[in-house]
Length: 409
Image (cartoon, rainbow, N blue to C red; front, side, top):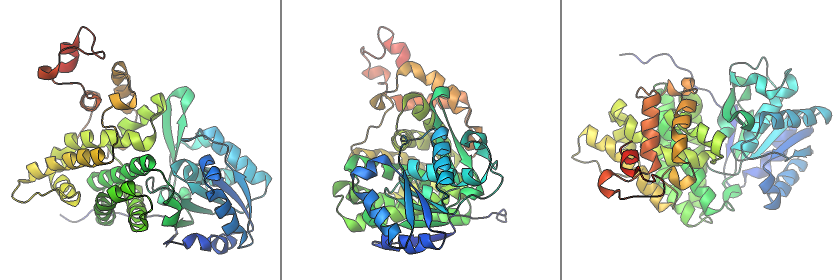
């Protein structure tokens, strides 16, 4: 059967490599002389902010810093950033940090040139026209936001997350310097790295995958499987940091074109309601969703297992596909990450509500390689919660007096 027509998009340009931050000023100057610099607040204390400002100034670009926002920001914080850019008559926006800073920067850039507020554009294709040019400078190897068309926001009052999705959010330039990740602590290295792995696996197994997204996703999976444990074990390992940033970039390119699947649909409510960091929520859910999805795309999951380092010789396709989730579990053990919902503070009585909320992410669930309804979502949450099996269960704080019944759920 012939391949369906597809397109493939991303940032306009990419600059990658150790020391590439030195090019920021000259590149920024091609867009103008005044930049809004959106930077994760924690980076100011880490010394990275000073390096970014200095690099911009070397190109004659003056910066106005915006760093008063939360991790996983609210739409109103993008409104505030855009208002500051307008007040200072900025010519471009530079986003620095993880997904929070870069997403906010992309949204602020389009808000400068479009009426209304950020919340007005949550959805797909709602932004009327392009905004200011943007340069994205990631300081973690995880989100891939430097090459995507999405800016995700958390509306805490509504206990909901949603993204602005528009081709006008694709950055003008993605500048990736692996040296900026050398100070990322081990726990954040692990969580952001697993986020990137999640993007790659979801994009690879999405029903909207295409040959180009598959190439990017496969290489990302292989790179992350090999180099994430090394980057976690020794953050000074510049080769591991470089390969992880490349893996994250490729995963971002894949997800921007093929989309994500049920992991993201199920993780969004965990962040919106309980504040579980996005990368960690994805990591915890990933192997359980993979186990559920394996029969929906066995050939691809079998290849994922192989890319993750599993020996699948002499195994049937079905058996090899089942090894993929195991490989992710093993990787999370190496990274000392929590691997159940219970471990990240999700109460058992919240699972029904989480399943209801996940069903609101229909656009994401449509990408899933296996049909998933509310009962299926609840089944996955139950599996991920970490309840003991019947033969292990002899009473616990979570289940109180009805332990056996709860375990059967």
